Image (cartoon, rainbow, N blue to C red):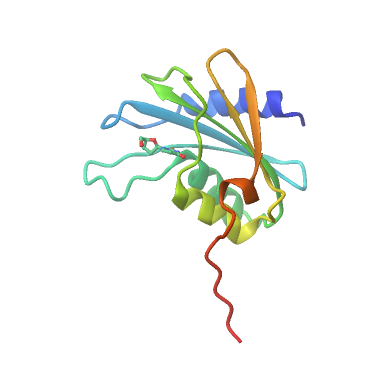
Length: 134
Ligand code: THU
């Protein structure tokens, strides 16, 4: 599946965002190596800290279904449910991606005119935290 199609799916996912506190809706579409797509949206909370980003929603849905190999993710976000400028994944989501994805995992961002920007995870997070039990 190409990046444009995956970004379209992220726009669909954005419609489910629950973001009454920030007014910023985000959608993500995660493509697995097996060819399945998992959608995610941000889900906020009155207590703020339980809020979760769209990317982690998509990852945790996929992981909890047993998926472990991922190819790319598209992310779209903006105020009042409208896609705006490129929505770059937050640091926490980058670290979650790094747990399960190699450095060549691709993150696709789309702005409001539909232009795409692609970055490898290793560019977005060059030195992820790693913990190895001896
Ligand atoms: N958000 C995401 O869903 N993904 C990101 O990568 C950055 C931020 C959400 C969190 C919060 O609900 C809203 O955007 C504003 O920060």
